Amino acid sequence: MNEVVQLKYGEDTVSVEIKNAASIETILPRQMEEIDDVQEAFLHAVTDEAYGGVTLKEAINETDKVTIVVSDITRSWMHQDKIMPLLVNYLHEEIQVPYENMVVVIALGTHRHSTPQELVKICSREVCDKVQVVDHDCDAPDLVYVGTTSRGTKVEVNKLVVGRKVIVVGGTVHHMMAGFGGGRKNLLPGVAGRETIRQNHSRALDPNKAMSDARVGCCLLKDNPIHEDMAEAAALVEVAFSINLVVSSTGVHSGIFGGKLDEAWKASCDYQRKCYEIEIEKQADIVVCSTGGYPKDMNLYQGCKGMLNAMRALKPGGTMLWACKCPEGGGAPDYFNWLKPLTEGHLDASLRADFTIGGYIFYLTVEQLNKAEHVYTLTQLSPEMVKPMGIEASDNLQTLLNQIDFTGKDVYVLPFAGSVVPMFEGQA
Image (tube, rainbow, N blue to C red; front, top):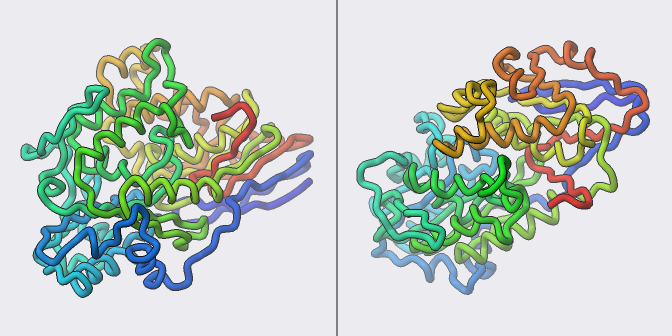
């Protein structure tokens, strides 16, 4: 079989020619409904369709000081800029909350700060002109301690989510550690202190073996220590209302779930599962995939999600062709600092001694890359730098294709690997 497939790469699209394969199968999300009238869907989500029996108007009153927590630029795929003006205008016009009583906090976690242009892309020019918009700082000296979880995580959060009515706006998507993103994750790590985040995320490592904890991973919520710890931490913040967005693979809003934090978020997770978890009968010899283009492949910290998902569809020892541009490099400031302990053979020990989020994403990426014989990666990353990780990199597609023989092989194509989760029997 011969076929030419299109993969997103940054803001561009590349064509991959597959020749003489035994089979070629494209794994796509199930077709999702796409919302034609976002304003109408938003209104239903905050009124008659709100989960948990509380509408936005019942959760907020005109005298409240309101903090809206919204995801950062790495989640701009959820197009929150179309939702934020609707939310701010509803609060002001329907509930009579003054603009000066509202503030938007960008849930950065440990990510870099936003540029002025990115704040507009996240919130819209309209919202930035009407309401104060600020970045969360995980190292701020005025973080507020709100309690300790049963697992011992000391929870410190942004002062603007304490003593005010909090509204959380997030995108629901599968997540490599927390099972699913969104919901409680907008609070921890979103607006939490660096040490709080470190304590939570360090539970990604198996307590007894030199490997990731098997309870932690994509789709996993039950008994997942990271998720359960996040949920406990989020409960220490009084969230008045949440809005959870699900986006189709074409980038159009498919679902808006409003209401109480836990109830609305879980409903969005159920919807996400139906659309993006795809059962496969067997694993393939070769997987051709893209993380999904910009902004999902801005850096390796974010972009590795495509490889992690696609690896589920690949036979152990198989070959992968992966498009992940990474114009920002590793993403996390310390990401590539972990190359040294990797090459010296003490990555697990060093990460346990000095756990960082960037370090664990690096660790997980290496752990998964080692399941394949070859991972040929179209990227702007330095080939020499990423080779010890198991990435065979080039910014020239043909150079990579010249090393792959599709003849007689079963091939899967995942154009949106950052979103689609292949479910093979025996996997979580």
